Structure formats: structure tokens, C-alpha cells
Length: 292
Ligand code: ARG
Image (tube, rainbow, N blue to C red; front, side):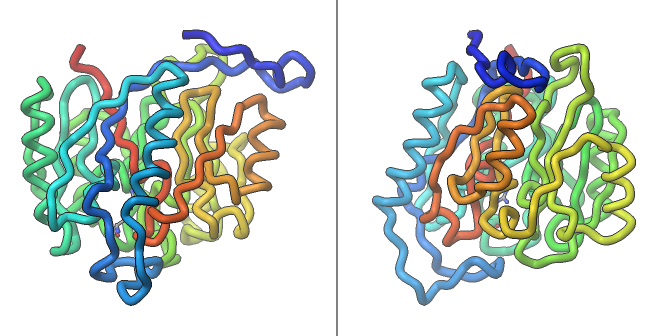
């Protein structure tokens, strides 16, 4: 599918090329906040499951309308965080590395995700070390950026490098609000060989990382979009991109403008109800790479 990119015609921004994606999502039929495993979660505050489902549906429908394939995993009663499918695994070339949650509350999700991968033709690899899948691992071009500090342990970075035979860059998160890597980095041009001409690029929130990690990011991605603390605080970075369309929170106004300047097309999706669980657009999206 090709999409017009009017911004590129009128500004100096490069033409962006949309790539078709395949995502795994989970309808939040059992969504609620009944425990607290990140600072966003307040079990005493009421949640509205119907609203969560309706908001989630807008994201789902936006992906489909823009030509992406969306697969669904059945929600399991008693596992309210299963909607955040990014934490269900990490997949490249039809090979799915399962997850081992840091937090007991989510360990019940491990098997259902691995069962889904197996039933859908993926080779499933059982993890040894504690890690929370695409929440903390992001494929940028041919490199895996890997987060640690709150959930995934450092040893899982070595493990994922061995499993996929790729270079892994470890990054340390230091702000408890940004406890998964995908809350502080958005991959804008994610796929290997994307576009050809330019390097895969990212957007990130510098203040979420320790000094060494900030240095690494600045050096590796000199053209990255650096997002303001204000936009980071509304989960602006927890977004998905197909190389042209970038699905972001409508509250991340500065980031939206930065994306337009670069020739991307921001698609605004409000997941305010799911933010009560500490998750946003990317958390609800697991990329399925390969196997067909
Ligand atoms: N309540 C979930 C947790 O704390 C939210 C997960 C968000 N997922 C993500 N990929 N950042 O584990």
C-alpha cells in the first residue's frame, strides 16, 4: 500500500516510505487496575473497561485502515495487563523469544503468549533471563536497543543477542515513570533495509536515561528527535511507526510538530484509559516479524 505524503512535497523533509506491518493485539476485555507495579497505576482509582475497549478499538481500526495486518490473542480473565502485548515476546524472522516477567502479577501471561506464537507458526524460544519482551527490546535497523533498570535484567541483553545473532546496545532507564524502554524511545524507521537511503532513526526522551546511555544515544543517533519532558510525561514516546504514519498520543503536541517537520504523518490516538495501567500505544502493539 502506498500513502501520499503531502508534507514532503511542500518542505525539505525527506519523503517517508510506509512499510506494511503485522501486529499482535489483545482486546482489553478484562482491563482494570487491581495492583500497582508502576507509578501510573492507582488501584483505588476506578477504571472503565468499556472505555478501554473503545479506545483500544480506535487504535486497532487505525492500523487496519492504513493497511496493516492485526492479529488478536484472546484475553484471559484475571490478567488485566494482557492488553499490553508488547510485553508478550520479541520476534524476528518468525522466531519468537518468550518473556519472563520481573513482576509476579504478570507471570500468568507468559504461557498464553508462547502458546499463541506456536499455534501461529512461529518458532518459540524459552527465555532464561528475566525480560519483558518488546517493552524493553527495540529493533532499530539491524541493532537491538535493550533497556534495563526497572524490569528486564542486564543478562537478558546478552541472551537476546545470542538468540538473534544481533548487536545489542544496553541502555539504562533511571526514571520510574519510564520503566520500559518503549516509554522513552520510539522507533521511527524500524525495519532492516528501510528506505535504503537513510539510516533507521528514533525519537527519545533524554532525561529518562543515565548519562552514559544519553551519550550512546547522542552518538549513534545524531539525527534523532529529542522529545521534551512535557511530551514524554504524557507517554508521547510510547508510539508505533510504519515509517510514514506515526501513531502517537494527542497530548504530545511538541512531538507531533517535530514529526511533521521531518515529513512523518502523526496519527493521533487517545488511549487515556489504558494509561491508567501505565501503558499506551506501543505497549498495546507487538510487532510480528517474519514467518510468512
Ligand atoms: N501495567 C503494565 C506493567 O506495569 C504496563 C505495561 C506497559 N507496557 C509497555 N510495553 N511499556 O507491566
